[in-house]
Length: 499
Image 1 (cartoon, helix red, strand yellow):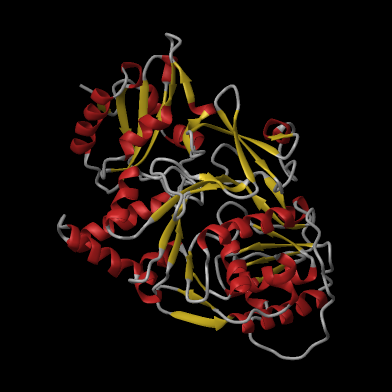
Image 2 (tube, helix red, strand yellow; image 1 turned 135 degrees about the vertical axis):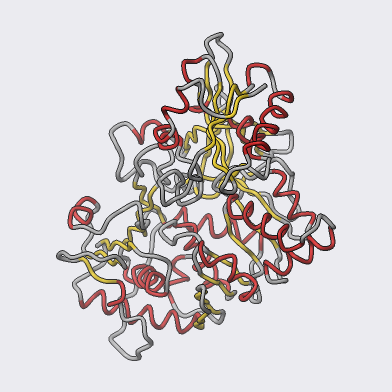
């Protein structure tokens, strides 16, 4: 598929760039032509096949053009997330970049303002060298989310990208007339997949950012929205606010209005989804499908039309196999692995996760039902051993707490191995501590005695990417949340206490 993508302009389709103040659009054949001009610009700067460029910038036209131009030259990219990296000569040296394109203020040899990229349409120029990719060739360095420690760098192979694109197209059949809505950072490789899909299959794609996403949907009227659970939780609250009632028809109309009225389906993954939110959108006539995967595996399982079981994250997609080991940990075997080790990580990191035979040990606990649907039960590392020897998997406890609309996120700890204490991020400020206290008691009554929370610490400042407590995929960073609230977690007098 990557060879097809770089071999010539697509037959049709468009890409739109949506901001808070408006939307611009570009025909995909024109995007392809412009990428050729950018490729010639890279050649003029001394970049050659086998080199690597870095892109550290917000979503935008230049990001897309640089990525496509690099593919057409067989140049690797390093997708660097703003806020996680700083544009410095040291960063370039650490990751072997010839040039680093950024929208941040920076100076140094090889650091180029992304606005200098020639994004305007220009004709002519010498033909570009023809390129062909082998399955083990690398197109990009992608980085893990950092939810469990410093980000690790992983070289993504063409075979893995081809396999994922083919598997998604097989189950969702994106066609001309579809418009895939993308707002997560393009530094996340999977977000670029939807642009590649548009170039391959001739459908539309709309690119925006998290801040503008909610206002842009009604204006751009997508057919598919690719989001994370936190986004859909926020969208649910907005639908309820607009409806002003619990009447099902009012909620359906408000949901259609928010999402633009053309939704074919909603896609969620990257973190556990709130079951109540999934049911809410299904009831509103917007089917939402949850899936599962890691940076190290790409998409592994997915619910989809014709194969959908609520509560699961779907069945293995083509080219993937789910294996549950003796400890209950999910392992994913790929016909075309993303890679067999990290390109950049601390010593021993690759050996802990990459196993022989294209197998990745995910670190998540799970089970398969009789029909092959996968249920994720929690992180193996987040299994707490109490002083009485009882093992508690904290994810179900966290999910039960998050089911209340007053709570956006919940992370459970066990200070002194004697009691469970949760830190919750409030859905609104000021926090509704009375509702949180009442919900705490309900959760405790419904759970196993060893799973009961002694108290809840309510964060004064909600978890966010800006304060370093959420990843770019809106997953809590457990270590950072603990560090920010360590004194309150340790103090038995702090927090909302259970009765």
